Length: 166
Image 1 (cartoon, rainbow, N blue to C red):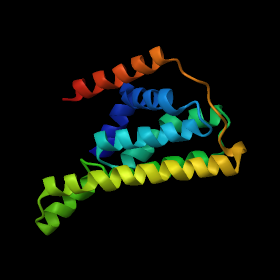
Image 2 (cartoon, rainbow, N blue to C red):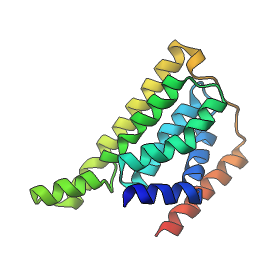
Image 3 (cartoon, one colour):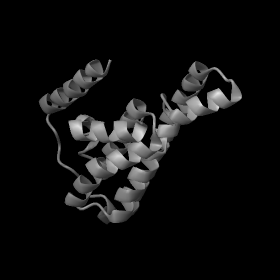
């Protein structure tokens, strides 16, 4: 069901809006498109709860853009694969639900316990992208600067999405 939800979200444009908002804020630095992919992966993981759906959706959404702007195959695929793993930690994770049922652990407590490691994992993955971009600039070209007006519009689009999902 989560993979089906990932495909529905991909077709409706929600994933594109999340990706566009993340790119608006971090796209102007070297490797910014990969950083925004990582941020979009974490946002999508929080919506879908599935690593598979996150990786599959971001592969459809982010990979073509990364290739279009000259990112290497290694960095593009690695970013999407690593960002997909955040779906295990960031609530609502289907793995946490299964674990909670099997071990009779409070699922709410598991969700709370997954927030900090999920954010910490995101930060470490983003740091790894920055290191790769600094060591080999050919892997991650620098993007263009986005004006504040467009950043606010992109953020407003994500806020509308969050409100419509409730």
